[in-house]
Amino acid sequence: MTDEEHFTVWNEAGEESEANIFAAELLMPEFLFKPQTRGKEPSLKLVDDLAGIFHTSTLATIIQYWKYTNEPVAVVFSKGWDMKSFSPFEGGWPRIKYGRIHEHSAAGERLAKKTGDLGKMVRTPAYAWLEGFENDTRHDIMEDSRYLDWYDRMISLLWLKFDLEDDD
Image: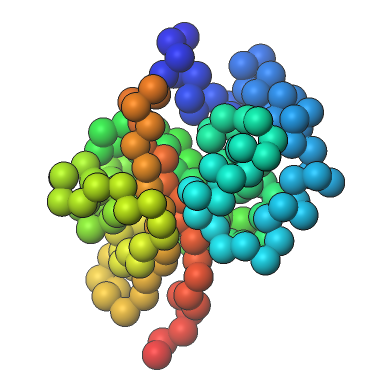
């Protein structure tokens, strides 16, 4: 397995996944990690700050962040326009549309070279990422996407900052 392939080995059965999870728990145990996330809005900048505190990789840190934050977040890993894996929102709702990255997402705009890395969360139409919102132009989610050169992958942190069940 190449370094690039190791990138998404976090939620698969096997020794590599178990080793990644064990190392993350050893270096960023819940009792130390979780207090660092309280009261802070999700972003890849926050993940970078946490990685600096714990001396860990962005990938390991974002997985722990997803696992321990109280915020409704999901993480998507993609290569080019194709999603490779994701960590869903807690409870499985809303569901992420697996497949091709949508051109109206921040990740899609980066891939199309319409924007660069904005370095912050941006408002994104819910239909760009979520099942059941295909014709819905009223609801948005927040997204922070970054291309990681070393892994030749895009990482997207999605946050449900707004109420998706509200009809207003």
